[in-house]
Image 1 (cartoon, rainbow, N blue to C red):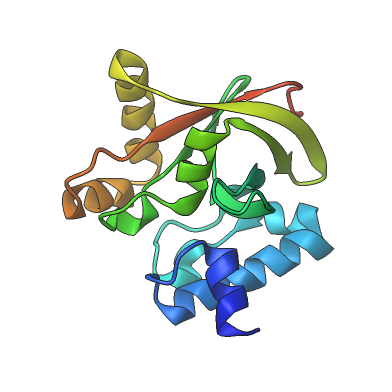
Image 2 (image 1 turned 30 degrees about the vertical axis):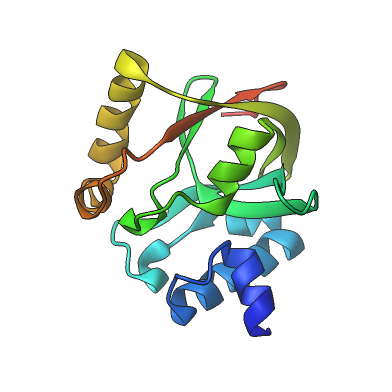
Length: 165
């Protein structure tokens, strides 16, 4: 895979190449076998905690207008699905998050299940309640927040249809 392809898949040139490569391989797996790719062990990129549920977010590039997709860990409570724009605590927001701010309508794929969605950044008490759940499930998010001065966005994906539990 070329350097440009790695940058597009990972969404940023500022991630280490090994991380971009692992994410690119996971992305390819999601295209081939979404059920197998749904659970992924981020230990390959240095994140502890074992397998985590991942979704494929289909979004539109705010500058290019191109259809893009990003694989992201997600958190779920009942019918709610949430993603976190931590980017490992880097100073800038991930590209996918900036794209969702510009165009919140998107598609979400969880395994083979796919539906339209609308992204909404959580604020106030709603964000805090989710943040507490997120860091309980994945404490490394606290490290990411400590590395940056920006508040890490927590984004709810308001799904048109709800995936099976």
